Image (cartoon, rainbow, N blue to C red; front, top):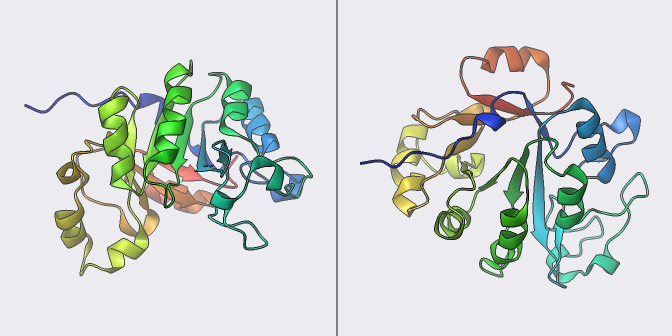
Length: 230
């Protein structure tokens, strides 16, 4: 008998802002303090990325390297440059404190060569958080970790376009890479617009950047992760 999935209804009520509610024309960089503050003002759920620094702190940042080419995994907080608005790159602890349950959070884990180190560092922070949140990752090991140690935190499996291209078609890809075969039991799937899978799980589609596409996707997915629509 299949066990009940975690409730993800809080992720389905409004489009989700990709990397915070950033806006270049307003000088609000992605994954910045300002992007989260703007989301709080607009009351918009947000997706964002986290990585582990050399000093063990968790930073809110997408890329594996800084603009100067340095791997972020080799940096401490003091090594990090300022963002375009001259603010510091936020830590996960700072974002959790600032949001404080006011809007839903979708946290993408960006693991590196230190297997499960990011997951172990983030676990107590997420367990202690008083608010709606879910995690997602391309790496099935992240989902497997949270299934074991925090099964009530909703988890999503990200599907990569590059991985899909390695298969003849999406059906073949899913047959060989089904998340449940890796003992991860995802509560939802996050997929690119170009490859929305046929599944009985809710699908979040990324990254939508215009209203026409958003309308076209309305009946093809459970929700969208988007930019420029707020």
